[in-house]
Image (cartoon, rainbow, N blue to C red; front, side):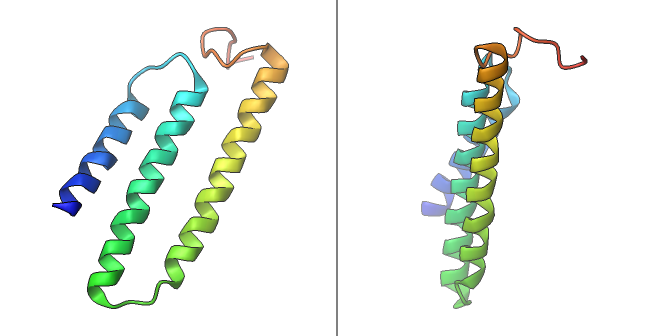
Length: 93
C-alpha cells in the first residue's frame, strides 16, 4: 500500500512537471516532489534489503544542491525580468 502511494506521488509529480505552467516556481516544486518520492522509494527498498543507508545521504546531498541551484536560477530570473513567467521573456536571445 505504501509503495502504491509513493508511485502515485512520483507520477503526479511527473504530470505536473510535464504540463505547461506559467511559473517557474511550480515547476521547481514539482521537481522537489519527484525527488521526495524517489527518496522514499529508495528508503523502503534499502530497508527491505537490509542495505546500508549511506547512499540515501548522498542522494539527499545531491537533491539539496539541485534545489539550491533551482532557487538561484529563480532569483536571478526575478531580478532580471521582474517575474517568473515563462511567457515574459524570450529564451532564444
